[in-house]
Image (cartoon, rainbow over the protein chains, first blue to last red):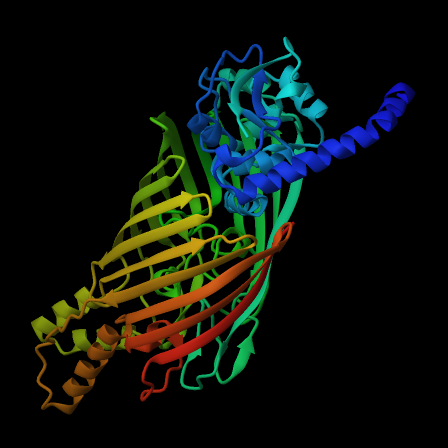
Length: 163
Length: 413
């Protein structure tokens, strides 16, 4: 515990810079609707459990699963979606790059489904570690984190959203 | 506990179902979540000649240079109970202006849902009704662009829930998902009527279904519904009795035709949504036909277009409803004063459900905070025929034109 605290203290300036970078990227993504215009940055990797029986997902499948329209992964296992709603704005980046929508629009979309009793929004994870942890432990779990954070063997990348 | 609940449900679920339950554990197993939504909003109507209503369930509306906050304001609280993945329970209470003028909360949903597998869901209890796109989220202002759903389309849809069951089956097809739904149940609400007394929906049956296809950009839904009323409208009874009392065969036959009780109303609806990044467009069309001339056939539709610019989303909506005129001959000569009164009564019944109105709305939604949005909207309404269907107490010499200014603050929590 103390080790991780001291490590996070040491990493704080780096993390802050990283956060700023991601924010800037998100902003750039928002300004230039076309992904090809944005600077190279960290891509988001859509990850699933190694036992899920899924090796690749199309963009349409990722959309259908994260927007609660398709409730299973293509292998048949029930999907458990996880959003990365941490401070680094990955959630904004993810939905902006996936469907061109702002967080408010995604909220509004889910308000319609939840309050008409037609489903539950994705689990809101606070950190990439939490996403990894859930995806590693639940067969149907599907989430996204920055590509460089993916630890081989723990989870499987099934789609990459390029900046 | 799990077994007891399933037993109480009486759904006859197999042990296989419970096996699936264990496999589909969710992160927050056994959780109870509470959320809610609300709107503080209303409209300003400078016109003193007619009161503007959001829908026909409201006993008072905006008029006379007053900003009426009761029109659109509402508060909803929802509890979701999920003891395990396939089973869920939902209870929702909504407080809004009711037919009796109070804001007493009503139970809008109270159902148990069971997913036989993730693609086949059964719900039993008090349910939302969604043959029309959005009709089960009309109270959740935060979920749509406008201040309120288009009145020309939804103003007549006076029921918001169904006591019964529905079954939804979905399948992946191409890049999208095809969904089919069947529902059946009873309507138990009360709504106001243009002529005064309230109409009791109690005992009215509703059944139907729809097919829906949604891919990353498009959504299409085609649905049908059949509603069969149980009760006669009390105000019509004396006219019907008088018709029968004449003993004239044509008039007696007409009385049977004009009866509302045990008569069906059918509707066919089609909706298309196009959604691509900042652009949102929605079109819905509905045709309603009735087994009795006491409720005129009508066609209604709207088209909405919005485009997000930063945190603002300006939008435009055009909506229209138009009924078909029918003139019926009672076979009773007007020369007899008693008969003339009956003929007049029949004419009033036929006129009561006539409507011809369109509305052009311009507005903007401002997503100023997480989970809250502000909306401003202007509506130009033109009622060409029988404004009393969608307005309250219109002056007989009103030209049918009104401009409304609306504002709403929508939030979810």
